[in-house]
Structures are given as structure tokens and as C-alpha cells.
Amino acid sequence: MSGIMRIGRLELRVMDLEESVNYYTDIIGLEETGRDGDRVYLKAWDEYDHHSIILQKSDSAGMDHMGFKVRDIYELEKLEHRIEQFGCKLTRIPYGTRLAEGQAVRFEIPTGHQMELYTEIEQVGTGTGIINPHPWPDGLRGIAPHRLDHTLLTGDDIEAVTRFFTEVLDFHQTEKIVTVDGEVMIGSFLSATNKAHDVAFVKGPDAKFHHAGFYVDNWYEVLKAADILTKNEVPVEVTPTRHGVTRGQTVYFFDPSGNRNEAFASGYVSYSDFPTITWTEDKIGTGIFYHRRELVESFSKALT
Ligand SMILES: [Fe+2]
Image (cartoon, rainbow, N blue to C red; front, side, top):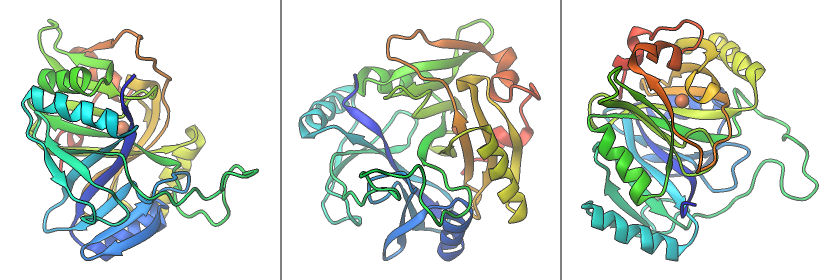
């Protein structure tokens, strides 16, 4: 069992802060929970912590960092030691750097992405509360996902980043994509929980962001998400379909800065002793888009 409880937050760089806030609140349906300087903090209605998405005003799009919430300071200390042993340099993000957060440790993984681990963040509660809750709150807007679910990132050395997440952070690898001869890993799906993935990597340029997935209940909610996108003229990349990998249901689209988002439903439950499922590169189209069985050109090219 990993000391990491879950994906906790994602800080995204956006170019037009107000336009982005409008998109993430009205269309995605997140709730704004705070602002300081060039950052706006948001959460989904079913999340307890103060924020899961931070929008940071910048002159280019992409991911500033991804943060994982760790069970307690003892687990965090253990992980810090192992991260340094692996050869990654840790820096400390002091208390007060960002709204509602305690301190965090930050480090660069083998694909060049910035990651943080932390234990402390203010809890503000969900839209339904914890006493005799109704299944969903009134007044939801847009796609209204339950939570931030996962990210997909690109990088060159998929083997090394997989080793880092499995050996250092105790993730398990649920699925992988390999070349037909089995020699080279070109995709890796990693879970710290029993979700099909919390973070995934595909071969591509280092330090790039592919997408953030937001969790919705089921196939109909994916369809409805696509309706909302068309109503609001949001650029959609792939209309509702199923993934072979994770078995999830999906629609892909872009935020105003070109960061790819996904409304993602279902996906199987995975336990840490399950064997890793393998997809071969000749079936990658089916693995990613189960019905059309081929990739769309933008899917590997549009990165932020
Ligand atoms: Fe995804």
C-alpha cells in the first residue's frame, strides 16, 4: 500500500486568467474557493479539500506541478528519503506559498515534470456534507465532475519514470503499452489507489502535459458533457467513446489556453497484486480509442 492517498492537486498555467476561470467554473463546473495574486483556486463539488485545481496566470500553457496527498508526516519522511536515494533533489515549498496549503516537498521526476508531496491542506467539505447527505447538491453547473481523477503526461524515458513511481512511491502499474517486439515501453498507467490510473505517461517530449481527466458518473454523463461542450462552442477533439486501456468512457476537449481536458467515467477497479495488462503498439489505436481503432493526429501532437 502506498503512503500516497491520491492525486491531490494540479496547477495549470493559463494565459487569460479570467477567461479560464469562467471556463473552469461555468463549463467544467468547478467552484472557485480562493484567489491570491495570479492564482485562482478551484474544487469539484464532491472533493473535501480546499482545491484540486490551481490556475496560474502565465504567458504559456501547461502544467506547473502535480501534487499527491500523503497519509501523514511519517510516510512523507519515508518517501522523501527514498526520492533522494533515487537521485532526485528535493526542495521545500514553505507554508504560506499558496492559499490553504501547508508545506510541501517538490522534486523533478525522470520525465522533467515537477511533482509535490504534502500532507496538509485546509478541508472545506463537499457540496452535500457528511450528515445524511443527498446524492448531489443543488445548483450544479456545467459538466460538474465529482473530482479531479488523473493526468496523462509525456516524456522520453517511460521505463525510468515507471521505476520511479513503482519503486520509490509504491504505485502499481495497471497497464503498459510496448513495441510489438516487447523491447520498449511507450506507455505506462500507474495507480496509488485502486483506480485504473492516477497518473499515466506516454512516450513524447519531456515535461509536457497531455491532459487532466475529471471524473463523471457514467456513459450518459460523458454524452451530456459533450452536449455542454457543443452548446458552449468548446473545441472537442474526440467525441464520446470508450478507452481499451482502463475501459473508461471518455470525451476530450481543450481549455481556452489549449490544455487538454477529459470527462472520464467508469474504468475498472485495480488492486495492487493484479498483473499489469499489456497492449502492443500495433493495437495502440484500439487501446486508446476502442471504437475507431486509430489515433487522431492531434492526440499525440497537441501538448502544452
Ligand atoms: Fe485520461
